[in-house]
Length: 263
Length: 345
Ligand SMILES: Nc1ncnc2c1ncn2[C@@H]1O[C@H](COP(=O)(O)OP(=O)(O)OP(=O)(O)O)[C@@H](O)[C@H]1O
Ligand SMILES: [Mg+2]
Image (cartoon, rainbow over all chains, first blue to last red; front, side, top):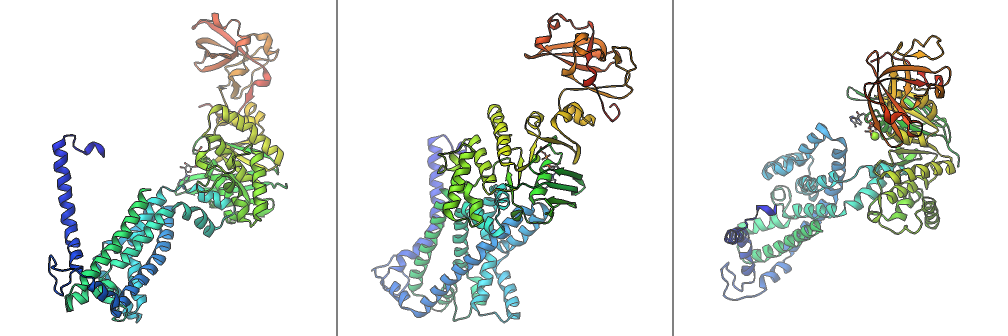
């Protein structure tokens, strides 16, 4: 890797400036909403003439937004709690099966991560409609778990590939049943990967809008769904305040994951 | 501790079309130390893993005492296993590793701790109880693995090449210690190795395996001196397989019409040392090499076959003067000449 860096000082400056430009291009659109959210005006103007926290107040005092926030956090937590254990067991069996069988299971499990969200949402809508589950929180949860499982698998598969399976056989021979071998030997050693997988699954749900728009009813709107709707209906800086908060949450989670993976 | 006999009854296992175990039958007595010896890929690990419950035989039965364990889950077999790479748990310290099987059996904490410490003392690891696994040497890890496998007093112990990762000196110490531990505990033990010296030193009996079959089961001495097949003869050391008709009896009696196995170190150059009923092999010296404790001579018989002759340095007064190309005779005592089944290659 390191040899790929140019030795020449000038070339290095050019490379770094280019990288900085790309970063700015990626991040500025997100960052623009931050000053907007502190504006005192009720129009979206940039840069703002005066500053205030009124849009944050507006958000925290709105029953609709608070309900959506609660729905999103509950959904995210449930998604992670269901998707990660499921993904762990799936990855263990793929790891053990090996060969073609494992490859085909893996491609089925990972499909949702490459299917366009809208197709998945339409499909899910019909399946849930048949079960009369459209509009329920449970329906949205099913969709989010389907999306979060591949994300968790992508984190857990390489971690399991590095794991010494003899340890599980040793534990079994010493008297551990499957549950105790997984809980006492695999889980503690994969705890960092499991934490990453949990946070990534949580984020997947927190960030998801298409399935929420299709499946969730008005009463159990998620944050992303409500944000889309409010952008369509009325534009005021409340949405900027929410975006800022939302970005902050996501950044915090991603930074935790990144730091964990490094250590 | 009450140990149990093991019965392996016509066990077969195939991976696709590849037969890893081919109708293996073996009786191991209670308290016996039996070694599975064989070249790489001969099915030793597969047989051990079938006993441990990680490989399900396609056919055949496995009995522990008179209990059929063929389909029993690995955690219910009460078999202590030492894995080749030790498979210690890196997230627990030494004490927790050794106490793990006791914790699984809901042994009270204080008792588990005390038994684990006693077992650690038994394998000479006193004082290392609180160490991390990562901070142990190879030999120390080996001892932790041993302690963990015996602490719950299993009635059978399986070891898969437990010493292969250690250097030569440590390996010899551990061979002695494992055997002593076995004698103290009286636990039925199946030990896997592909080192024939190790098998000879440690075992009550050796089962030589090749290509998924057991070739011979016998005491180390009989395996070495009286191999039943050519494969066993050649696997166990420098063996000469001599065609019928290339030997003569010193006393003039008629020589055997069978294929003979004579070990290189059975020969003498002095006819008097070999006894009156010795057999003699005549030929031309092709090469000689000094190996410290002995000389290795390569003798080309008149039929063209080459025979290795190993003469202890102490008895090899004349060896240094021998010259390649010179005619000579090697004598083997009748007791050391063994007829084996199977035609010449
Ligand atoms: N899971 C498996 N799938 C396919 N083939 C296997 C499997 N396990 C073992 N084999 C094959 O079965 C044969 C016997 O393997 P085994 O591990 O028992 O040999 P071994 O005697 O222990 O050899 P070594 O001394 O190298 O450890 C080998 O040819 C191996 O490739
Ligand atoms: Mg093996």
